Image (cartoon, rainbow, N blue to C red):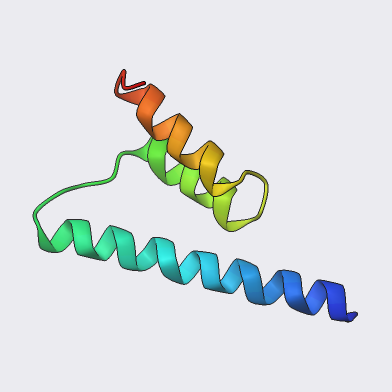
Length: 65
């Protein structure tokens, strides 16, 4: 494995942890994350979209500018 792919794996792991924590925090407040949002979060975790794109998708889903 190259240094670049090691860095990518570490970043994906970090992103997955951040997402898991966010979902857990929401669940502790009796909130749920819908399937569409989970798919978008997974796209972010895999590095396919940026955090900016993730936020834009979330806001668009609920009609926010």
